[in-house]
Image (cartoon, rainbow, N blue to C red; front, side, top):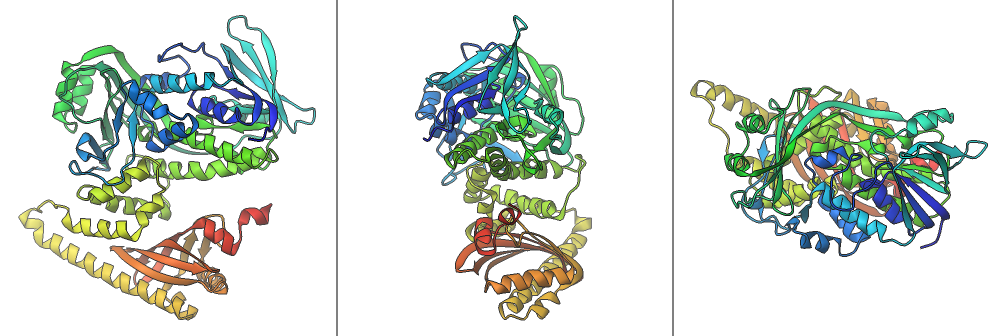
Length: 595
């Protein structure tokens, strides 16, 4: 690796800081981790990571990155007794998403590898690996007081710190400072003091509160490695149970939308009695209690948009929860921090010039996927208040269909898990082979028998919905046929006068087109590149039609999914989910134009 500087300083030695330090050690002569705590010598909880006492899961993508950064890491964890789900055996998991229970039997092909270390063991193991790197040192027991800059305030040159024991201020000079101090990061304040202003924030209030109890059990009564019952509409409660190393396990119950979780173990069991597996509750009653019940509250998902700041000083990056903190029930935080470490590595390989801008923009693309998953899942609950744009409603409607399929189809269940564990992008669920299984599963899923008095009405409603879906499919097909024949006027005639079409991504055609004039502009730009669209599969649900296609433009071909909302025989909204990288190569990039 080419050296980019003499000294890099990382503020905070939690997971995000440790992984940033690991990457920086390849590009800087020296790396210093500044940490306010005195770090424990073993796998123990510490004050600076209060969430370490709570239930934790690192996603499969995070584990694969750790193995990449620290070869042999997975074998090391399993050698310490960490539970590992690597055979796709669905009976060893009990997951319920939005009220849909993942299939409990059979083998999920190509399933992700899931390891379940406790947070203290995981962080300690990573810390030991980082401490073994010769050019990395730890400065423990020090608070961060502020940032140092050049006289013109254009570059960060280090940090002012103070020892907690002696309360003596000192300076640590650096070519690069990385803030990994977590959700309570003071970088927005520091930037405002320097005249850069604060980053804008995207926030969704969820008012999560949960309670956890650590246990020890040698019983084999619970065969599952992991049990996670997520909130569902009408029941914003959750339940979790994870088997950790050394016969330890953790029970968690929680709630969203401001409700109160129980404060005693006996109350936790009563709280979950109406929806948690009885054999797990019985096993908990027989287990040894370790410590007391631990409570935690998270007010919101919050994303500080450093990627959107007009001005940034050189020499400063922000990672982990200091940038984006998620609703923790989805287990995304540590994995996103690991992904950010790989983004940092890739940016440094390209050089040191303009590093902050390049890093924030590149990492925002990765964060966005996790953000949309978390926020979309939260807003699927009517108890959570917040805007629900058409793209999210479409996405959630599709996820609902996929979740139904996971109840009966091990292939869909396996692919869904690869997406939720962040191994694969969500677009993998749009492959024709998966969509076909999703559609078939809608017929296979057992449906509750309606009461006799309401049966006639239910059958009539279902028949009308089926007729509507079929009509909308035929209308959508006519639109594709008209575009393929070059008859743009006929294609436009299928749209409402105020229709909107959103194309995802940052290509020159990305964005939202409103009204027929702007839609005609979009169609003309596609035609200029001799764009051809081959439809593959149509999936309809009432007013919504999803179409998987293969798009050829500028000599390149890629899969795409288009979603249409129709009303009174006209398209009122549309959203295209395509290969954004191909679109940028063919049509150009907004970023290049702006640069």
